[in-house]
Length: 131
Image (cartoon, rainbow, N blue to C red; front, side):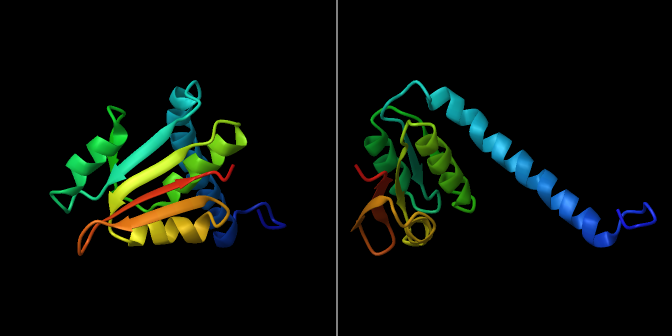
């Protein structure tokens, strides 16, 4: 509010952004509670634009759930950071184009990272806490 008790445009936009961030973090942390019991929790993602990606991701996941990579990878970063801080490191893995692992490497530079090209478009990659 400004000195007259009115909301300024800047203050309103800031409050809206804060509310959006809180809602995003709450949405990410809720699924983590289901993984908290697993000492080796992992998230496996695949790029749904490529037919070969989902079957390969299912093989990597070994029966665990998989997710289509349809959004900005920052939700994965939030899951990784929250799980690591909770003492239950999360392993991220996927079958995607190189843009997802590139972003994750930039956002999580201290994590252990492996990457292998599968074909002209797809990479198999893993990211986990360094031991």
